[in-house]
Amino acid sequence: MAQYELLLPKMGESVAEATVIKWVKQPGDVIELDDTILEIATDKVDSEVPSPVAGKLVKQLFKEDEVAQVGDVIAIIETGGAESPKAETPAVETPVVAEKTEPIPGIAQLPVENTTVKSDFSTSERFYSPLVKSIAAQENIPLAELDSIKGSGADGRLNKDDLLDYITKKNDGSLQTTTVILTPPVPLVNETAEHKITTAAQAPTANKPSTTSISGGDEIIEMDRMRKLIADHMVMSKTTSPHVTSFVEADVTNMVLWRNKVKNSFEKRENEKITFTPIFVEAVAKAIKDFPMINVSVNGTQIIKKNNINIGMAAALPSGNLIVPVIRNADQLNLVGLTKAVNDLAGRARNSKLKPDETQGGTFTLTNVGSFGNVMGTPIINQPQVAILAVGAIKKKPAVLETEHGDVIAIRHMMFLSLSYDHRVVDGSLGGMFVRRVADYLEGWDLNREI
Image (cartoon, rainbow, N blue to C red; front, side, top):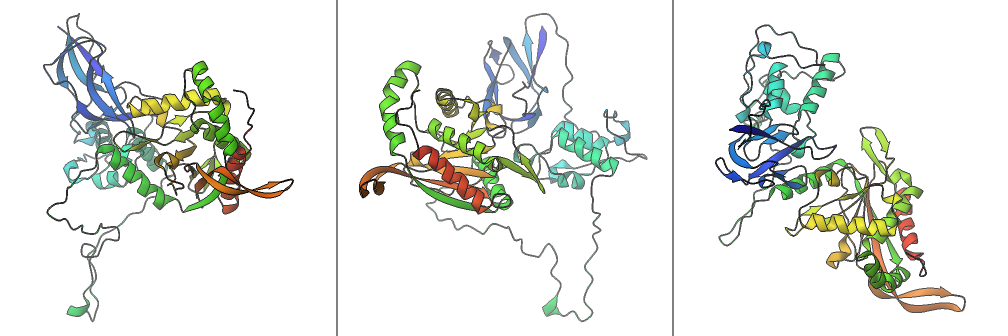
């Protein structure tokens, strides 16, 4: 019998790893062509890995909740064909003798004098893949140092590229490191029992969560994986960016009347329903071209001005969680193209069919709080972006209109737009002018526009 090595497939240019969240097939199970073998998850998207061959699952090489790199062998399938060449399976044990490991191309090796690296990874709250453990052992990096390295993977996980980049900077001297020597606290000369020095272990933790009171009838619900990611992302955003929100009320009567006029003919012609979302996306893309400094991100003291206008649209999932698929180069699509893109991404988001790359690379985010009946909101910035726009529910309200014969009160379709922005790089003038410009495009909608 031949053995087929199932690799973790490439899931997009920006995706290097995935977490195994569930094995659908178990060792010994018979597999048909295209049967789902396992479910994996990247930062926000859950995906299924189908089998490219028929046979029997022999071995699972990664456990649930473990992280695999793209190209890793994740399973062995026994087939009826000729023996196929075997790929190297990922190491599952961390080498303990650093001097016996093979050098990594392009990475300078630290001199090792019979130094043995023995790290007990069970003491760390952080997950490390077998490859990262292997590199750490080879480079003689202890667990305490490994825990201090910032990771760019899911949940801040440290991946291979993060570690190799750290090692390169460390070896060429460009990495600023601080050596901390821990010594016992020195007692005060006149220290009394009432004034003892509080040690770090005794000191209160600033971010320690308060104790929650639970009564007998309360239900404890564990967060699912996506909710944990969302929670971490939201807390990180609020601690990263000083949030400011500006509000504008817009008269969108012409936009509403135009959509009501064209929606039936548009659906017949394009086999697509036209909602307000593509209209909002178009207005945002135009305003970004007018104010390109809203389409930036921050890297330390550097402002990175984005060339592409990639607009994310927050979409609610049946589970209640949120996901933000991205419309790439939104400024280059006409209203028909935007409508098709919005409907396609929203539909596949609801059915968990998005590809990992389709939630990456956004430069600005739009969220429609009006779909929940809310008139306005103060959204949290989707890092590493610097602004997010919330559009509220469209309501009929009395409004004052200026006419050539004087002011009159009329029933108009009104809505609020609220822009949250990063006050480190977006001042009130830019934020206010931008959201006002979006409103201007919506208010100035041409009732006779052809589509």
